Image 1 (tube, rainbow, N blue to C red):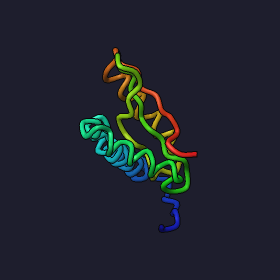
Image 2 (cartoon, one colour; image 1 turned 45 degrees about the vertical axis):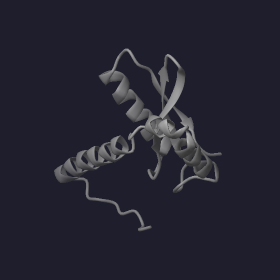
Image 3 (tube, rainbow, N blue to C red; image 1 turned 90 degrees about the vertical axis):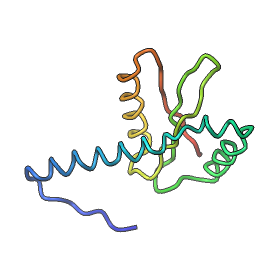
Image 4 (cartoon, rainbow, N blue to C red; image 1 turned 135 degrees about the vertical axis):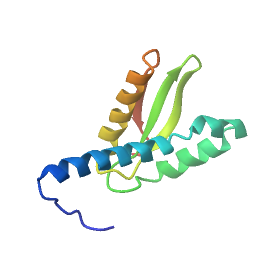
Length: 113
């Protein structure tokens, strides 16, 4: 892992910050390959992911599941990990999804303790 660097506070910093935020969001959305799809294999893959994450966080902060309330109950739809503050980023993604899909409710739960 490389040490964090501080960037100069110029107009390009703002553009880089936006690009970085977009890249992080894209990464998170790619992680949104629904864990629900794993459920089609009798939940074996989803259970394996949950067991792996229960061992401890990936990175320095606890990992989080992005959860969608559905008629059948809460469903883990993505795993957020590898960010400086996984919880904050997970809630950012949840807010984006709730704005895009106002009839659905998303929230985050910690994946490891």
